[in-house]
Image 1 (cartoon, rainbow, N blue to C red):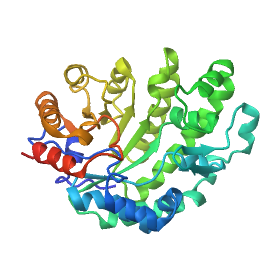
Image 2 (cartoon, rainbow, N blue to C red):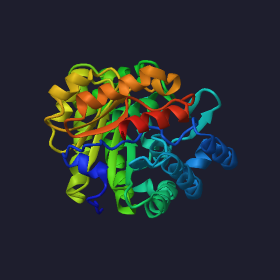
Image 3 (cartoon, helix red, strand yellow):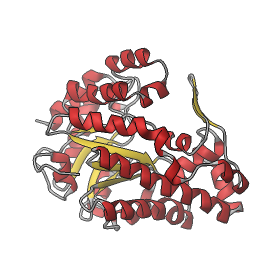
Length: 345
């Protein structure tokens, strides 16, 4: 991995405060863009889009062409890893992903090992290679994976759930068996992300979308410790690799992530007060976030006010402007343009 000094995302993740903070958006390649919808229609299904390197490259580049974001993020899905581990994965129209669930320790035997995932994921690595070669030289390329707790919660329930109840039930009733699943996902995630870096990813982001459902010591055991294990091992292989953590909903637990020197950036969700993030986090780590995605639907004065407020509060430290969660399908590209014009002055 090479980091060019003109890449503003890399400068921010190295702790530099920039006059104009770099900006990208979670889910910036997605259904709010007409060109994405057209490409997805050509591809057929969502998984066809993920596993076809030409299609995945095209949709990753679309928001870069249109908006000139400072970073591109690989177009993929966090559930490609469970599929590579041997689970069936499909998408129900209007309802989201489905997996054939793993519900107890005995069923772990039907999963593959960490070294057996790469045949399934080879098209993703090819996408990384193609994207890294096609991006403008000033654009940082971000690879990613789901964090073990979030990925495991889907594997256990077979779908998204409101409270990750099935995973929490297994966690409390059979911590040893549950720990084996977390260990497997953690080790597989390390190998998956290492291949992304080898193929051209310059930054890694770890998405723990359901970290906020973990209480007490479970947050440390199943959100913090697996993320640390992944980041530490990646850094041992790629010492200069910047890593962004996103333990969504962590509340005060964000401080525990900020205290770990192995992370370079910390993405904060919409519930985190910007002034608290400035005071509690930003002296320790680069902060990324956290505009409400709804403002890219509604636009207007509220969008301008909140964008400027985040810049005023967080812009005097190491900062990457982003959303507090992914842009929604009803986001308006004109509002994205307006946001960018405010940030860039």
